[in-house]
Image (cartoon, rainbow, N blue to C red; front, side, top):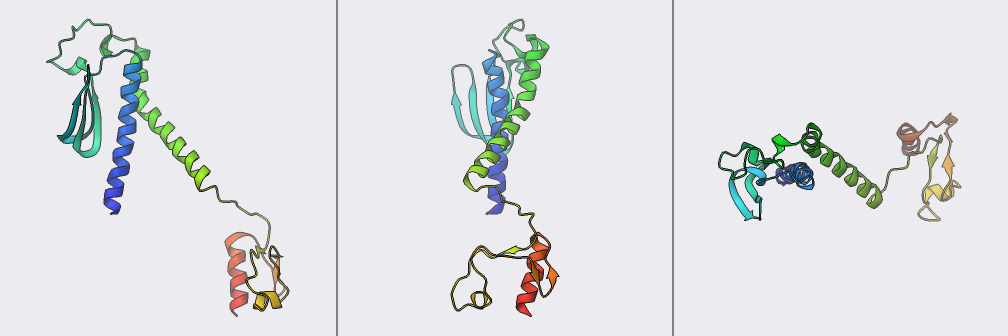
Length: 175
């Protein structure tokens, strides 16, 4: 299953990347005759007014086809809406739009993850927090610990921060 998940994620990243090129070209009025996700034989195809959209068998890449490179294109070579006839800045925007789309997508995924899952809070205070004492007759309760207490020393040894402090605390409990 993990191989299929990796291929699906790669396919999604390729789609976002190629969509960046495609949208940058179309928003500037540059002709695009093909938009394809994947390589190999065509699995699904739709012919739009100007552009052929295709999903291919192997989602390990993709391409945005421009009529500049197509010898069968009916568009005259001097058409101002061909990529080759556009100013250098327009071409640079189309070329860099794939990477920019991936960066925006990565940022959005991170923001969504932080919003749904949250960001782990790092506690730099010394000691080990006691989140909950489960029962009144538990050894922790008998020792006087309460919910929310912070143990700062065990057997005269001051606890540091983070995981090393938790290990020292657990070793003291288990011994």
